Image (cartoon, rainbow over all chains, first blue to last red; front, side, top):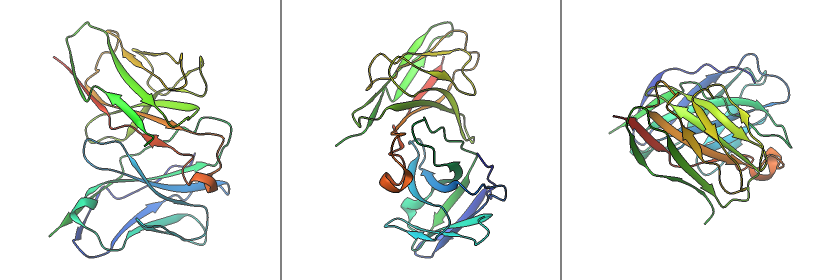
Length: 113
Length: 119
């Protein structure tokens, strides 16, 4: 699975949009981009995923560049509860086998008043 | 509601003792995983299992053992051979036979974790 690069930390004011970048320049054509977040001392929580089109759900939006070498997770109106470590992961959409996830150190997002 | 239950939430172990961490899921997932997380670090895979009675080593299996006698259960034993067992342990499960468009995530779900401290 392709390696990802994320900034170590970011700050965001409450109510503003949080834009978290991820670089995955070696991504293969059959690899999806996944985002998870981990609030302190809890298990990671799935946020969103995409292949090449932009995606939106109730939690966030995912913008993937046309060359698929980078993506941005957008939390449109960040709240204090969004303070967490955000992980960007790319992996092949295998079926029939266990899907091991490779987590880097992620981006620590601090939402402030 | 379906989910993964890890117990206990906090565990203290004396040096030289074995200890077993519990992980139970009622999601009917085939695959289960154990990850270890150290402060400020990402998750590292210890063991995983694709089906009952089968499991494979992950990246840091030394000093750990697992069993998969039932689909719902995947206990992890931290043995005395693990030199630095103090960490946060996370169990996860997934449904490999679902494509990403069906559940968005293969149903990849994590438990709430067990924090193990060696005293």
